[in-house]
Amino acid sequence: MFLTSHICTRTILQKESMLLISKRLGHTKISTTMDIYGHLLPNMQKGASDKLDATLFGSVKAK
Image (cartoon, rainbow, N blue to C red; front, side):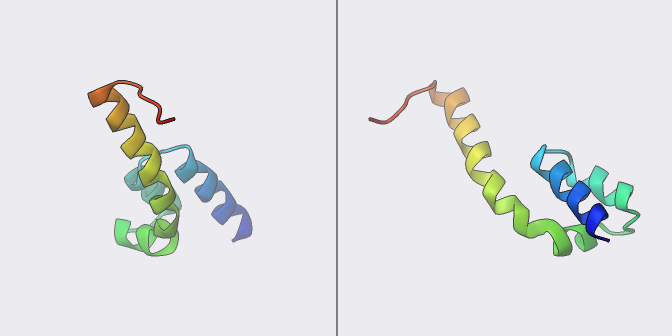
């Protein structure tokens, strides 16, 4: 189980689709995957937000 969790965590951190990960794990519902690994996603929200800001407003760095 540890190896599966480790590989899944690394795959999530590589920003792979949760649906794809869910299917690879053999979960019949994506909610199962989200219940187990969803806690990793809040850390990714900041990066996604920063990318969107850069796309919309350019790469402006606060000083």
